[in-house]
Image (tube, rainbow, N blue to C red; front, top):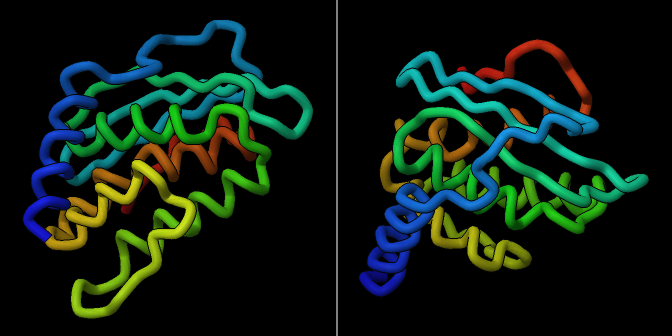
Amino acid sequence: MSDLRELYQQTIIDHNRKPRNFHPMPDADHHAKGHNPLCGDRLELYLKMDGNRISDASFTGVGCAISTASASMMTEAIKGRTLDEVKTLYSHFHTLLTTPMHKPVSTDGLDKLEVFSGVREFPVRVKCATLAWHTLEAAIKDEKSEAKTE
């Protein structure tokens, strides 16, 4: 478990310091804003679609290390996937974060996102890790309102 915790910490720090896909996308097909009013995290998510597949994704915003790392890793993970694949990935990620620590949870299909299992130890941080994912749902639906993690 300590190896996973160390990997979790290193990954969060790396993606927070050097977030991937951190830029606006003026020609995005889908766009949504997300806000976590409990801690002030804010992000904007941009998607480019090629039919039913996400061809590109990026984000901008300000937030804690977990929020930024989650958005960074999410944009990497969803590129090239179909909307159905993205919905399945979101479901697995959400289950990973919301399952109590004393219960086993599958990490199948999560690949690098598995490092977020450490967030389960800090329930108050789950909203930080899921903000980008809630915003993704809003962007896919092309909702113009803000996604919130309340």
